[in-house]
Image (cartoon, rainbow, N blue to C red; front, side, top):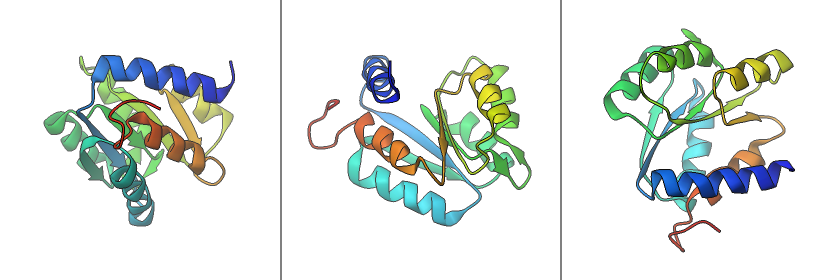
Length: 147
């Protein structure tokens, strides 16, 4: 099955499990990247709450107070990595949808992400449009349903 078909299947299954009221947490130390993702989310989805964090400490605080349904993580943060976040999630009963958006597109990171339950791994430089597609089609504002 190609990547687009996998994405569509995943999104359809997610709609049944999570419904239309979802929170997303964007974690990136770059304000420009967070703002770019915010623009995509604000115009094309029905995420009811969009949260942001720029480091590991903020991320953990937001996760445990807000319990977002979707985590969009950068790998390298000023005080740790996305894997530190994922390790802390493993210890709880919390199972969000996890996406990684990074410039560190190394096979080792992709493998580790898969082992940690990451659903999607996007390269910031070459796959930002794939992320855009995933977020825009996650929930359509105009139609109230997928696709």
